[in-house]
Image (tube, one colour):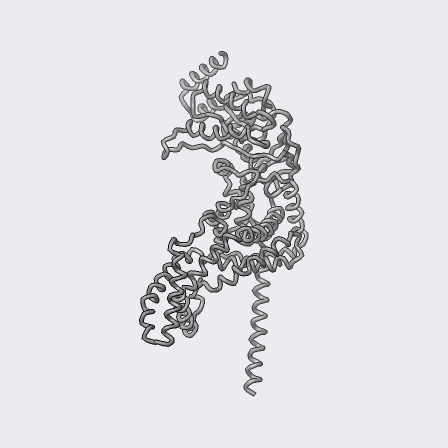
Amino acid sequence: MYLLFFLLLLTIAGMLSSRSNKKKEGKKIAALHDQWGLAKEAEFNFNFIAIFNDCNKEKNFHQLSAQTKSDIDFDDLFCLVDRTTSNVGQQYLYDALSKPTSDVVVLKQLNEQVNFFTENEKIREEVQQLLMALGNNNAYFIASLLGNQLPEKPTWYRFIVPYMAFIFLLILIALFKPIMFLLLVLPFSINMFLHFRNRNYTRRFNKSFPQLNLLIRVCEKLTGTTIPFDKMAVNNSIQHLKPLQRKSRLLTFDDATFKDELTQTLLYFFELIKAFFLIEFFTFYSMIKEVKNKQADILTLFKYAGLIDSAISIASLRAGHLKTCEPVFLPDEKQLAGKELYHPLIENCVSNDIEVTTKSILITGSNMSGKTTFLRTLALNTILAQTIYTCFADSFHTPVLKLHSSVRIDDNLLDGKSYYFEEVTVMGALIKEVSMPGQSIFILDEVFKGTNTIERIASAKAILSYLNKKNHLVFVTTHDVELAALLATEYELYHFAERIENDEFQFDHKLKAGPLKTSNAIRILEMYNYPAEIIIEARSISKNLAGQ
């Protein structure tokens, strides 16, 4: 009777638990559905997000420099593009955006995978639920296992094995002569010290090893789905990592999860046994050795889960309110074309067209007319074409390019460098790229504005001619109209302009062909009620200089 009653209670509890789990899953699916096409509202910790990028030393076609990332507000762009579900996916996407590829075949395959998730909502949400398991902040630290900073065995490690053999011998003798157990007090104390000293090292991996186990389980489940991603290498890597997964169970990661006193007492007893026999000590260094030997397998799983999550993220980006297109890649020639290109981080951004054939582009224009924004728009779309196969435009045709830029430069006061010396340093790095393999695009804003006019124009002309060699593309803005004449045979001229209505400047932010024939600097002084004497003299000097 009591047994039947107990079984009935268990059945009811199971039904309630099952209903609760289904309700939770329903809420998760609803949340995923509601978030589709929207940017994340969570905070972005780039110290964690960048761990994989810092650790991943695989050879690649191109790596964006810190200068270029600053020039295009890379972190803000990432916050817009990132729609990943897992932290592994977020780290993978950040690394991918930092490293434009030259492999158009891989990009087109990514596009097919993105389209698959766009067209198969149910499968996509099932996959997202699996990836949610890697959404804990601790998952960021899986990437730390891929770096070169894993701890080495201490120099005295080779003495531990004979030392432990001696302890086992003492134990055997003590079984027959119990008085010998007293001799074990000293080695017990030493081993306790070594055990907890080792904990200081293992503590660094409290987050990475358990999350690696979770990554293995998630990848196992992902390989069981019908998504169009290659599974053979992943399945092999999962099998290779099984021993590592088993060993990790011998390490203590989070005892706080066990609350009841009996379990805690048993754990303390087990802890003493592990300490005395240095089980964690040997296990830890054995695992570190195995991690070093199997980093390629860990990387395979990391990239598998990361790529899947990134593909879903790109599909979500395309499903949003921002207009996007797929790029078209051109042969390695001095050509590029974009229709209705715009900057996604600027609300109601004015779009522009651009077409390059045989010549690079020199842009003049008034202050605040949109020159720098256009440069950033072109730069970020070039990057996105070769990373996520998605551009913010009606159409974008481009060769495979390496992007180099000099837009945002500041005085480096801590190093004692002036603005001009900072420019020289940045420009020097760009000049080296001219002779490197591949086709580059150089995005430059106001070359050498930190020095005097005559030398600035002379240096800028020489450098811009040098950068324009071979099939390299150069997009440069300037206030120096003299450069337009000096570079007329090498650069097509474009400009941004404005009009004045009711003593206010009106900018249309549209790129126009040809040189700028007006300027607004003195007019701005006049509009801000500078004394007439200053205005008259400024205009007189301006006319005289223009006539020279």
